[in-house]
Amino acid sequence: MRPPRKPTGGKRPASPSGPSTGQRAPARSGTRSGPRTDQRPPGAPPLSRRDQRAAGWSDRRERAETDERPPRGDRPQRDDRSPRPARSERPARAERSERPQRSGRPDRTERPQRAERPDRADGPQRSEGPPRDLRDRPARTERPQRGERPARAASGPGKPAPRAEQPRVKRGPAPVRQTEVAAQRIAKALARAGVGSRRDIERMIAEGRIAIDGEVLTSPALNITSLANVTVDGEPVAGIAPAKLYRFHKPAGFLTAARDPAGRPTIMDILPPGLPRVFPVGRLDMNTEGLLLLTTDGELKRALELPSSGVPRVYRVRAFGEVTQAALESLADGVTIDGVHYGSILADIERKTGHNLWLIVTIREGKNREVRRVLEHVGLQVNRLIRVAYGPIGLDDLPPRMADEIPDSDVALLKAMLKATKTEPR
Image (cartoon, rainbow, N blue to C red; front, side, top):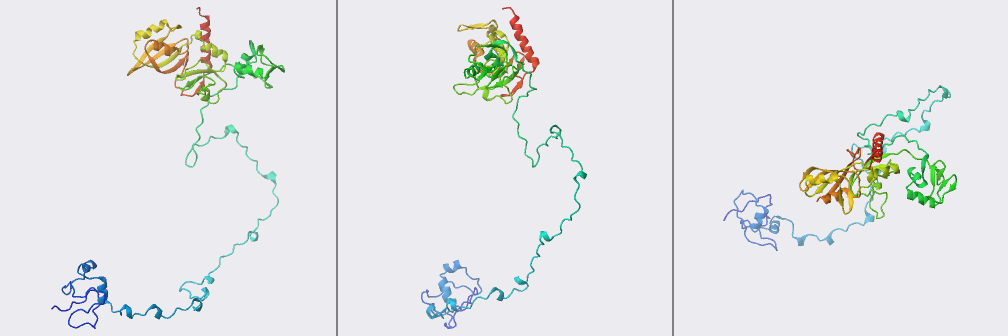
């Protein structure tokens, strides 16, 4: 038989009460007895818990062989312990001041107090000197005028960016208004003065809001030659201003009207601020875009939009279909469609893009839907229509929804074209 195994892994030796024959002491009750199944040579490294379990060891057996404490039945029970003193019999807790101080740390009461701040009233007072003579004070420099103030610096770090200003129509000095007019109906004269449309003025007369020399009018059937003594709601009429003409880039999707009973959007909803009361010259269809003239003079508006004026209107047209140049040149002699005669029309093919054509069309009458009907007559379906010029006035690079005033030189040229058309023999 091999000699008894030396204790390994820091385990305590077996109890000295065991037999000296080399056999291990009997295990306590509740543990399995018998020889070890892991007979290992002396000096072998200790087994891990996992290997011990695989060899038949258990924590209970290990505790039973190495623990020298008496069995559980021999330990004193809780009832045999000395009773715990009541809370009232316990010694009182030492006060903070009686507790021993930590080494190297001064007592809280021995710490120096903060120095008290002196009261302001106790501080040094300002010395009172002789009263100042305000007459000896230097004169204040004059503030710069509004026009002399320097411009604000551009936005930078810490400064907000300037707000984007809404584009406005540039207007010159206020024109001189004239009160003397040719003999005409009062509704027409007040409409030219910018009071309102003729229908609005007739309604105002029916409401008793217009008077001449203090006498309220009751009927619009009255011709006048002066607006000097005419009042509206008690205020004198300023007179008729010289005619102004503006160009406006109309986008598609808006009616050329002041208002629409059906509630559809009109050009008046998108006109830029700064414009006076204006009238559109002619009409562009809702889906037509491009140049639209606006004027403050009803007489000029009527003269420009009449088909007999002969002012050329130029359009760029995109149409679907096939057509020959010869068929387009035949329109120069005029054409009659459904009983309506259209005058001379000049049409040229600009370019082709797939099944679409871009054309330049020039008309002189401007009848209702003239361009669309004439091109449909030759087999083309218009899908985009842009007016690019009206007489000597071109659209150029004016952005959509923008308007600007036309120079007086162009207005004079346009009026000269109208006079030449009236003098031409029919």
